[in-house]
Length: 251
Ligand code: 13P
Image (tube, rainbow, N blue to C red):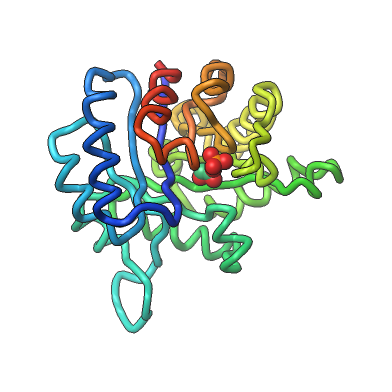
């Protein structure tokens, strides 16, 4: 049985003060929940303070991106070791906003995933098709390439321990959620590809989240799908009550 995992991706929101306030509010709301893995990914500037507030709680910390080199002259970048040093457990890699606005390629995503795993972070690798690609009927082709290239060179054990987030680009921040059956269809496809590429155990263990306009109102129906192991939540994770309700929906 896979433990569902619900993670908040705060994107470019919240100052340090606002971040601390949000997690202080969230902690008691989810304190009793043991059968859902919970995480928050604040902006880099808030990681250290949020980490302090989360110490000893059941909420894990993650970052929204990283660079694959361990250190060096890479102005503006952050390494896996730096994320570990502030207490991160996860790192989101290959989010569609990074692919679209910052030109990230599958090869970059793969380098980041490998560097994260080697350092001991759990990568949350994002994949998903645009509206145009869905309308053209090439969703599976697109997702297949992102999965195959993103996971290139990994061992089955590494794949088993990571998280993949299926986030259809047309559902992100738009209020349009994929129908539960649409999410299930693509996520079952992803798991089947992982079975072909990395074997039974990796496919059965890897957790595949859904992301895209998850709200307290639609979360349960989506999380009930057999190949949906929780969610990556954007807008609705910026408010403690709505995020806590989404976490509960995964129980
Ligand atoms: P929204 O929940 O705001 O649609 O964002 C989803 C997302 O991109 C999470 O990574």
